[in-house]
Length: 387
Image (cartoon, rainbow, N blue to C red; front, side):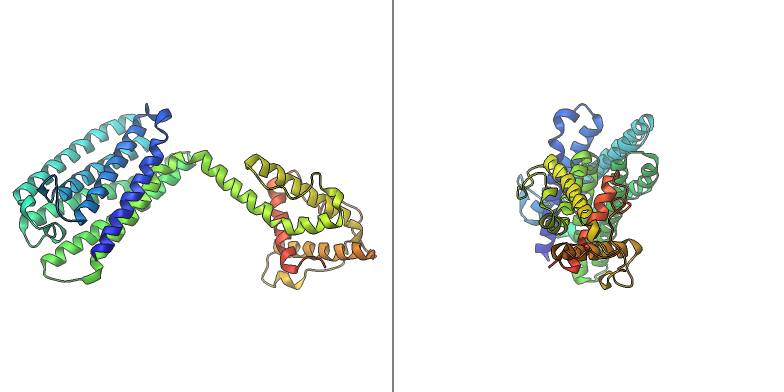
């Protein structure tokens, strides 16, 4: 059980450090922004919280003081929650409101940390077994200490969850909306951590053993912190992530079009502007090659018009439950397959497609054309290449 708990602390710590390092790479251009500095402080406190948690799981003392790692973990957790609340205010609230409510949260956080430190000393925290701060051990001062700590974590979860929805509807920035939605989910998961932790403490005080369910609080904590780390970095993903997703979509389309392009190229080699075979080296090269592949498929398709039989219906591969777009794609793929065979054998059908535009598609909309050709190429692959 201790191994799983330690692993949960390590996962939470690693996700926190990953978010911190990611944000520190942006320090040069963002350091003058107070919201950015607050965010860095939040992530530092988050890292400190779960680093101390992992240290505490290892047992022993910190700086020669028993259970000091537990106290530092709890004090940092309170400061971290307050800082996360301030980040939310800086992201979404009006400047005057953010300033006013920031003062309230800072004062509340300081008061809670002072109260926790006092309770720790009054309960003889340094002289107790570390397990006492896990279950309370039925000691009133230790139970009070733990319950005050849990309340200090649960209240920010509730306030953050309540604020994220309205703030997400107010902002016109897509990245910030997504960050706020992630933050609201993280707040729910962390509130579940607080609930599970409370159950652990109260059942232990009542002498009830809930067995492996004690681990639920650690799992909720690790999952919530990992998601929180994502939410605190989401507003800065911006353009790089969008470009990566666009590149990924383009690369998948480029690969999906290959079987159709290959057979059309073998049938009409003159459609290719450059010799095939070169690999994709960068984003701009991929854009160029995808455009060339679409143009070459279009030209190869036009070369087949005298051999395309216009009388055939949708093939069986489309399936009875397929949508209209899918049936059209399978129909065109089957016609291309038959036309390639007809061209090789020199047997043009009586009713051929020897006139008209390129499948009556809007070729000015490149994204739509790629999507359509990808469907046709996928259907072509399923039907089998021309033989």
